[in-house]
Length: 387
Image 1 (cartoon, one colour):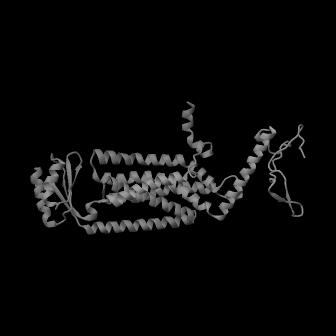
Image 2: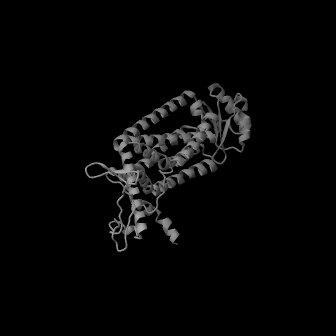
Image 3: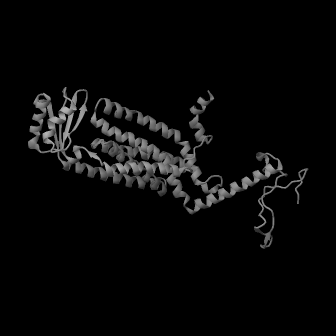
């Protein structure tokens, strides 16, 4: 029962720091995993390439709403008109077929439709025909690329003014990361790239950015006036902010993925709705990649960039010095037999760090004095210090 209660209150415990996962400290592991995924995605793009729909390369589509013919029957019917290329035949609904060929000659369209009607034994008026030229697809691709570039420029400008340029760079890297993975998955699985794919791809950019901005906002709040203290480095403050928003990010991702999964597996898989499948795959992969990048990529990159600044390097040194002093005080308390939580200010503990024998410290008047022992609390019975 207590374990169930711990799981139930995990969000509260993460927010208060009772439980913490070191995401930023394990950044090399996340970078390695991300690099492997990106390598597979780029390999799919360079190897198999994208399977473009007729909207991008041109062609003809023949749709039959009700037929008892199989997909193999449909391929055989259009085989004489494909010039050696494979026709794409998909199930539409329960008993419909969608046949796509590269032929876009309007004069041959009627011949192909007549051959389909004859071989599949359907009425000629039941074969719906659509012809798309390649110029339309090129225009759509151009507009999509322009929209993507404009979107990323606006993202960088907004994040630079709302937060800082390092956050803008980290968010931009995360966005590119999500785009490459999503496009690479399309190449690997062989799904057809349609206008629905482009719509889904542009949609996930907004979601990925939203998730990243939520994390960055918490990080910014945690890092406010961080140079005025010596307890936490910037990376540790960023990791704390990441933990505070972890449950929110997971919940948002799961809630978003559930309906998209139903579109992909039910609408696209069971019902055979081609357009639903195209847009659902890009959304499903993009949402998952966006959640991964906002947690494991964007924030560690931000911490890397910030830790390189002079003020954060100085802060890291101060934090290290403070922790070293605290460790010496704890060791001194242990030597004197006093609990660590009571050591500070106790008359029996000398927590002042003194130099080693091979180090020197300035004496009164500025001259160096050598030979003092360092960091050891020496006491006599009764609480008097040994001099």
